[in-house]
Length: 333
Ligand code: SAM
Ligand code: DTB
Ligand code: SF4
Image (cartoon, rainbow, N blue to C red; front, side):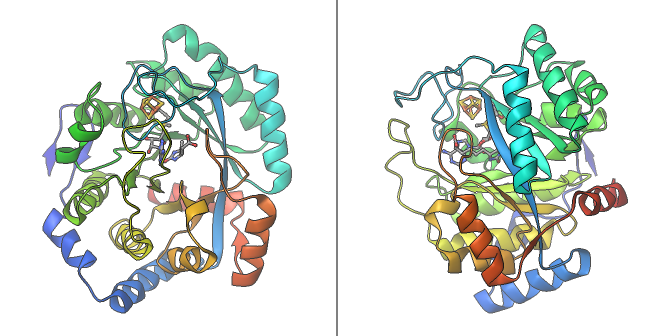
């Protein structure tokens, strides 16, 4: 055990080398192991559905190399100030009617100012009152802000580590890995469920992917939710011309996350539009049991609902009821 000053505890249960060894397994052995672990902890045919909305879009001070919303990249994205609470609630009602159980509100901020937080607290309260699980992703938090979010009824805070520590500085220079760990510690301390994952396909090596997973798996307690994003290449960002990550390497990343984070929901997140149905099916076989549902992510597209319904019918998958997610999370908190 190695206690970090910021409150996140790293148990180093998984070393980078041990995670690399999982990545190196023959594909069939890796998938069999991942599916076996998956069945020990979850219904293998249920997938948790989250719908995203961007409540404040673009003009972000940070320089994250993958992001359409950084003010430092010329991405032709239309900026949008904070949405009205009523507009957000209407979108949440529509998401619930379509079958989502969690509503995730994202803001393009380095972090919220205290005065920015007030309307977001109203959004959380009203979305929660609809019977949806609530999630926000607002960037770096200042002391006290997580407790206010918790008091408003926030269930999950999304804050990704995104990549391995040694690669982070090649992707983002305006904040540090430790800044991110500090916010994760504050979220955990406030009693909010942690949603923390990363992006692959940014030109990183397999060792870097293993480093990201080792870092996520070493958070103690492990995050309840782990989004694995496949880079969506946005014109005008520094990573726009990056080579595609082999889909089978993406499937391996999901499988390794499932094995090392056995009780977490592993989310097949951004990038589904660039995966075939068969590749997505392999991700579910590898242990993904959550995904974004609805035609849009934050600023980019997602498969439409009709296509996802058809995919679920072909694979015999069904949406995970909200109670099940709540019960399982309560079980390992
Ligand atoms: N500003 C906040 C932050 O950085 O934490 C919240 C919003 S940010 C858009 C949330 C996450 O979306 C990022 O950490 C990253 O993992 C993911 N993301 C952003 N742009 C992406 C892209 N082009 N492809 C894949 N994932 C992306
Ligand atoms: C996460 O890990 N992926 C989501 C959510 N958390 C906030 C965001 C994906 C964004 C993809 C690019 C976009 O639409 O702007
Ligand atoms: Fe994009 Fe978030 Fe980075 Fe801002 S902090 S540029 S919104 S990923």
